[in-house]
Image 1 (cartoon, rainbow, N blue to C red):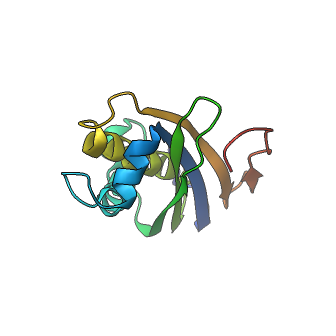
Image 2: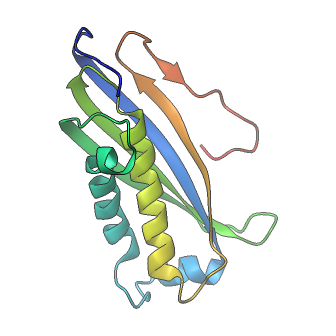
Amino acid sequence: MVDVTAKTSTERVATAQATVLMKPETLEQIQRGKITKGDVLAVAQVAGVMGAKRTPDLIPMCHPLLLSGVDISFKEESQPNAHGLCSITILATVKTTGQTGVEMEAMTAVSVAALTIYDMCKAVDRGMTVTDVCLLSKSGGKSGTYTRPAQAGAAP
């Protein structure tokens, strides 16, 4: 683990995303509350927060951090893409004041939320795909601000 003792505590924020591609019927069942396991997005939101909090238990060299905020949101795309698939994009913003950043916590949050969507819906759509897990932005610390460049055709 990297020694961060000499680093200054600053406010640190990171935002990440992941997308789950699925059949239109699957998204419709999620929206109508027809998934047998329950409210998919509510459970995925809680799972994402829990994932962010448990990141150092999952990623060996991550420092345990006192998170001051974790926000999980979803953007549903009901219009099928060129492959006939709809999507749910998950955004996670994680905040702390500390000596190291929260990028891994944000990326873990969206990954766990996406896997939760898959788990809850796999009985109706085993062909779902988790894609585009990436860091969108981070601020704070010695390296300053990072914003992912926009890519043509990429999810927001």
